[in-house]
Image (cartoon, rainbow, N blue to C red; front, side, top):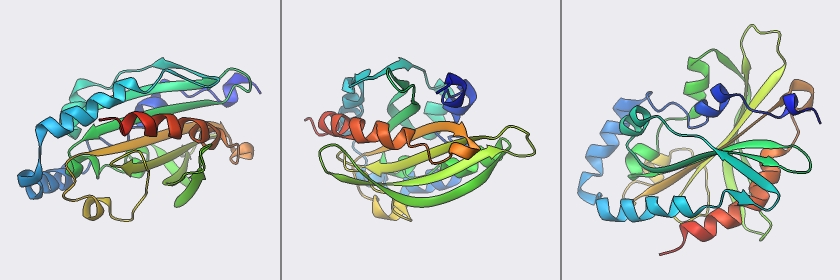
Length: 222
């Protein structure tokens, strides 16, 4: 497969954390409602676990990207990783972002608003999709496809995102309600890119099948 069909641009990769600067009013409201439940020590301890997610998972090797400090402050991100993983044999390429912070801020900022705000149009979704990992655990993620509006390019960017308190991922319709009261919350984004005629190329699904058990193991460590 040509690398051009699977390689994510830096712009796509930067977008995968999705809309940090949007919906700040909702984030602030949740912060106020959860203030009495906020435990900085618990959030910091949970965020530290992200650094142990390995840079190589099976045949997937990664390069690391950074998240802008302004984005971290505005989205109240306490811990994060952002990497591009590439499969050594089939050339599949997936960008992974995992964030950690207080439940209120982490439960907002859908990537739909972010992509559409910078010139993409939605080509599919969002719909909830279930992924079974190699250990047989089922996880639910939102999935949506985007392409540049009024562009002759046929590339489609697919985004998967979900939330977790312990490495088991779900995609509730209203995460602000579901996770309200949790001491901290993880949020995961997986992003891939392909030509329109290969929109069903399961790059992210293949990666998550292998990666989710590894991520779960690290997030459950005390």
